[in-house]
Length: 145
Ligand code: ZN
Picture (cartoon, rainbow, N blue to C red):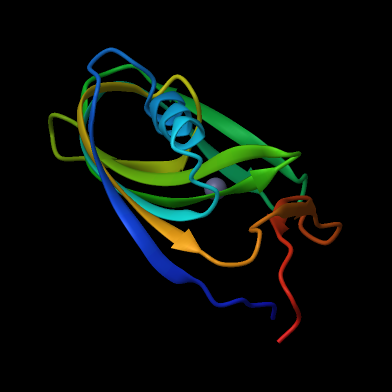
């Protein structure tokens, strides 16, 4: 395992803009407010979603487009750096009109209908992702513990 210790800084509360991209809005806010490390939660509703499942054998994301209005029951994730840019990593659980659940890694083209996000900013060492051979993913590069 690897780990590091961070302190909580400001908590940012966002009313997301209807018709705009979920990840895009959060990323833009983090860039404008220079939020380098954070924990994120969000709830609301979306017009459509682009969700992913990471295939652990092929090391590729399978993307699933869901083109219908859904409740965003919960999104949670974080902010760190990937290739010298802020990267928002978000997973979400959604429900449709029948209450059926779809969930996954949230990609761009997940469009907000209404949304409330809370960003808990963290203060500490640089939080940076590096490519990991074993998983094929860009994972946090932290001190060994
Ligand atoms: Zn993910």
